[in-house]
Length: 619
Image (cartoon, rainbow, N blue to C red; front, top):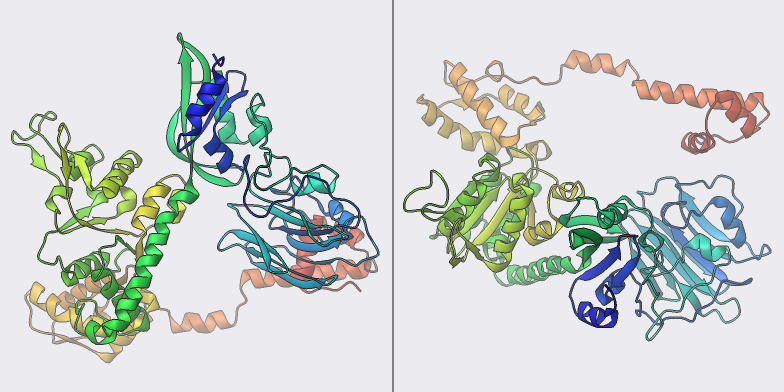
């Protein structure tokens, strides 16, 4: 089957996606150039270095956000190789360390902490070499800098990063880079004497042809599925988000049959980091809009706009600034916020302030359309496309919005299969009606909204990451009412007259006591809940003044506040008891921590965590 391997390799190397083919035994038969670039099999970035190994006297810099994670199983015992002997360092700690390999006479310099979700930084002038390392959990990067030369690696969950300087010349001898898993160059492997490969231009790539897929990519669940599909399991998928060797990818699994027999499987791989280029368009759009802000004296113009967005709090003023910028741009807008914050109103205000305000504004509630109808509602259908279809067919929402704005409310509720088709429309601005053969081109502006955390939805596999980056060009966060309570008063005065007209009653005003009660409430339902409560109050109020008794909400009881002052929280009581028990145990065993741990029946890691938490020193 692979007698023309050289020809097949030349053909697959020009494909823009990574391609990996394994046979029925799990052996790699095709691994194209793009796949090698994605996973670091080919790595010619940076200055590069020669092949070699760590020897006595070399300076080793380690930055690891989770000890024992993606570092080859590194343990605190292994750190003794660079002079670190600290019994409090344990698995799961994040650590940055600088030391001399195989040399105990030079004191190492290091920092560590239990919480890997917090950033960790170390700066030192170690043996006249300026060293800085930073673990950044927000941007998911680990950076090691040597005399201002930077070595940075991105990560998804855990990562062990290492740079090695020659002990005599102080020049870069080794630096960790993408593909270290495939090259078998984890921190622990190299500290234990394993040789590392060369990097840089014209260096030899790792030969993966003929190797077992698990040997190259490890025993992770998704690789196991790839192997099982090659063995004969009826399994396939398209554009599934998978993390492989620390790289975020979109993968498509395709079983391969010959003469009705399973002969292997293909994994097509897209590097998601390329999709992140879309986010750069967002940044560029924001920069241009900021320049426009200075030129047009934005503050003066905003004052007369967005009158339906009520409030004078700093939070709502910031929202109005963003609305102004969005109205002057054609970029896709993503409105985020809890239910009841007024996302639909915000979308309409953006449209009304834009140059296309006289064009259609199509509001689509994605969560209210049955899954079986969503495609025909979005794209329309031709005559006879399905049973029950109108004789003349029907245009869809996208055609209705041509020249104007389509507002996709509750976009997170769109089914996964429909997300694929939606992405194509957003990219090409064209589609086919259901049952149609003619491609229809449209021009519209997209505004989307959701009350869900789309980043979590992506991680859980319910929302496509490429679609998320496509719509998250210009995000606008609408703060909940509880975070801008100073807007309650102007909201009440704005909403109340309209409610009175709706109910058909005379105009009413609200008492100061009632306003105070509204201000004490936490507003889980936001502005929508405020409207409902005011409408009930108008119906209950027989006079012209709404009193606090007409507001059917529960605020904090003052008597309960007094009772709470006299009681301790349960977790505070537990903390005090834990601290006292540990102190007494240490006193009983004259400061012997091991005996104290055994007496308290507590694990080593948990014991040292509590010593640090309660600031307990051994007697």
